[in-house]
Length: 334
Image (cartoon, rainbow, N blue to C red; front, side):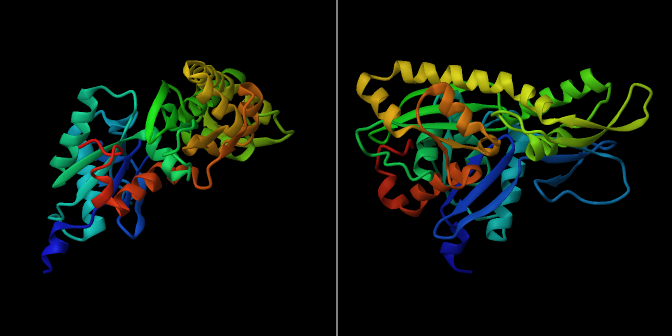
């Protein structure tokens, strides 16, 4: 076997609460799977990772999300999940890649050490950390090295991260402990309150994508299936207005945090943001009408990234593709 193949390709890892994405040098994104570990409900044994969940008629599996806010909540399960993904990339368990990982800008030194240790446990031979906001800006194609302000609003499953990037560094940042999953839970609660039915978060997600809007709701409905208090299955129609109401709290929190970040900027950087606007990334950026709503509330231009779900991984990938040079640059935190 080629010794360089044993060492493995240089990789970028975007470890998200909803999904894990791996970018391989010169190949692009090679893994984009749910950040899930599946256990057998009776034995507790792990029976699947990511999209590889076994089908069958055995005991009902239990799905665990081991990542919260971009850092491992369960280090052991997260490490095993990443090893599984690395085996899929390289075809063997001894890849020993160099890895670039996104680090939330507001993370403590402990969180950075935890991510670094996690990568080493997953058999990385060297680890670099890049601020999450900087990676998102790179992936969105923003001119991050210029002495001008570029604003990123990344809306994930359980966390929204806001950053202003200038001169290849994160100048100001804020984190909102709310994201797409909170909107789904609000829809679940709304249906429970209005119709007395318990629906799953997955059903809420489908309804949100189908008729949801953070702007003025359209005159549409979606049918959702749930279970009432007596255990009977029922189907009800929910309106776009109900889904709109469910988005309010999360959107309001994002607007408030984004305003505070802009207010902390110097006059020059604030003027840059007012001129250049903000770019939306993350799965939550797919919500219909969100860019328009934020544009109205923040009074700055707002647009969605071309590939919002993959933006951070693509930004990390830019570092990986030129790792020999960038590893000595201020982008990297060895």
